[in-house]
Image 1 (cartoon, rainbow, N blue to C red):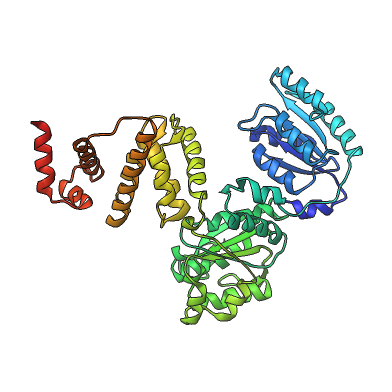
Image 2 (cartoon, one colour; image 1 turned 135 degrees about the vertical axis):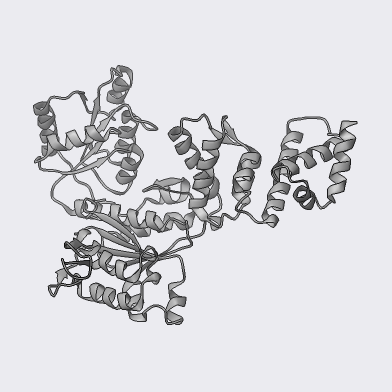
Amino acid sequence: MLESTLATSPLPVLLLVDDDKNILAALERTLRGVPANIISYSSPNEALQYCQRNQPQIIISDQKMPLLEGCELLSKIQTLWPGSQRILLSAYQDFENVANGFSSGAVERYICKPWDNKELKFIVNKAISNAVFAPPQHKIPPKVIDDEPINFHSMIASHASMKALFDNIHQAATSNAPIFITGETGTGKELVAKACHAESFHQQQPFLAVNCANFTENLMESQLFGHVKGAFTGAIASQEGVFAAAKQGTLFLDEITALSKSLQAKLLRVVQEREFTPLGSTKAQKFHAKLISASSNSIRNAVLDGDFREDLFYRLNIITFSLPALRERGEDRFLIANHYLKRYAKAENKGFQRFSKGCQQIIEQYNWPGNVRQLENIIHGIIILNNGDEINSKMIISALSTTISPLDKQRIFTTMNETDTRQSNREGESITPLWLVEKQAIEQAISFCQGNVPQAAALLEVSPSTIYRKKQSWNE
C-alpha cells in the first residue's frame, strides 16, 4: 500500500472501508480534493491489517460487511490507535450495534446512506482539522507474527517462515531495487510479487505479469520492448511493450531463466541504465517501474551451467525472497485448505463447512508436489463435483487418484483406515469383528481403486483371487 509515503506525509490518512466497491468509488469521488491521503479497502480484514502496521487518522467504515462488521472493526482500530477518529456509515437501521459502538467509544460519528455530500465533506474536513498524528509503525507487530494466522494480500499463513517473509515484503516494497523470487511451481511467486506491488507507494500504478516461458524469442522481445510500425514483417502498427506499459508500477517477469542469452543482454541494459529501445526505433525510453523476477528452477545452477548471465543474476538478485514448499509449512496446509473450502463453497453455492478427521490427516500428511496451487485446485474440484456439508477421505482420495504415485496411494489409504478406526473407537463402539474389519478394508480399497480389483489387491498386498474368494463368502 502507500504506507511508507503516507507515514511521513504532512497530510492525514483517511481510510475508507466498504465491501461494496461501487460505494467506495462514490466516496472517493465525493471526497476528492479534501486535504488527506485517501486509502480504500473493500475487505475489512485487509483494512485491519493495514492499521496494524500504519496509523490512519480518520476512518469511515460501513457497518454491514461479511466476516467483520463496522462497529467491531472500529473497536479494533480504537485499540490500536486511540487517537483516530472513527465514523460509521450504514444504510441499515442497526441501532443497537450503533448505540453499543457509541457507548464503547468505538464510534464517534454516524452517517446514514445515502449520505448528503455537503454533510459528508463537512464532517471529514472537521475531522481533518482535529487529526492527531503518532509515530508510524513499519513492521508487522510481534503479536501478529507470533500468535495468530494472518491473511497477507491473499496469502494465508501461520508458519513463522511465511510471517517473516511478509515482514520482509513490507520492508522491501518501498525500495525500487529489483526483487528476485525463488520457489517451486505453485508456491505463490506471483502472489508475492502482487503483495510487493500492493505494499509499495506505487500501488495505484499498473501491475503487469509476463511468463517468459510462454513466448518464442522474437515474440518475447516485442512483448517486452514493444515495436514501431514497420519494425518487422507484419508490424502494421506501433505497439507498446510491457516496459512502457508498466509506467511507474511493477513489472513481474516470471520464469526469467527461459530468456535467451540475447534477451538477457538487452534486459541487463534495462536494469543498469533504466532505459530501453523499442524494436525498429533508435530513440531510447525511460523505464520507471519496479522490476520483480522469478524462477521455479535454480537460477544459480543456470549461471553455473552457462545458461544465465552472471552479471544479470547479480543485478536482479539484490533482494531475494525464497518461498518454502507447502510440505515445509506444517499446519499451514490445513489452514489454507479451510480457506479454500470457505471461498469455493460460497462461490459455487455449496453447503460444505468442514473436513472429516481422516481427510484432515491426508491434507496434513500428503507432500503436495504442486504446492498451494495443487491444494487449491483439488479443493475447488471436490466442491464442484460433490454435495454435502463435509469433505471426507473418499472425496479427496478420488480427486488425488490421478496425480499420486502408488506408494502415496498406499500410505494415504493406510492413514485413512487408521484414522477411521481410531475415530470409531473414540465414539465408544464395540470392537468390530475381524471378518467385518476385513470386509470394510477390501471394499474401501476397491472403491479407492475405482472398482479395479487387481489394483486393490496390490494395495492390500494380497492376491486378486483372495479378494474374489472373500467377496463370494460374504454373499453366502
